[in-house]
Image (tube, rainbow, N blue to C red; front, side, top):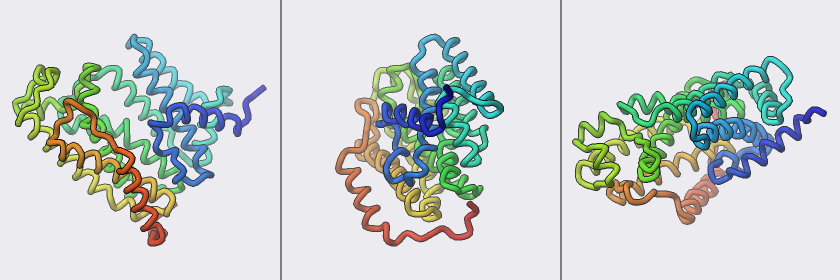
Length: 293
């Protein structure tokens, strides 16, 4: 017996809940009628991410990701039987989502398997174009926004969030033999891989991370106009996400850019402060003007 569409969305919801700590876009700030679509996209991306991160054999990991791409194409041209793809096909149809955005996510996970070093900052931005930017565009499309200017602002915020995660997770990534600090930055500041793996904290390291944090903040600022262009529910979610990313960078700065010994993260009081700010200002939100939907 074929799984119903409603049961398929419930299946995706359960998968999302099982990874809830990594799923901020599932918060109650998202309009209730839109959440099922976010569940479906998250289930697709989360499973592909597990193929990249949880399978030790590279060839098997790449094969599973290729199969995932093929299943997406098959679901769009036929009648899927797996609950996840039933829900995903409905999401694509209801929200008019270009399948290329989902294929881009799989491309990013494939890159995770194949590449653990990056030559330049621009190369990191290209990675973010596949790993992070599709997420922002998908969330906008789910909420009825289809506008290139909004996509541009969203891309800046999403890329900045991806970069923030890189600087935040330096101490974790080196344990996995992954370095997201660009080789060009390490060369510019005369800081070696050996020093990184030895967790050598010196002025060269400080200046290197300072510059990367500054570039990331510039990207956040370029994307900030998106917040004012959105309706209240999605505006709140995006503003929380923006402020959370900027707060992480602030914590890195206050700790004198030492991301070698600990991972900066948001604490309970940070979250309360952001939420209080949103509640106090929510009555002042306005509907967007001159935005196609």
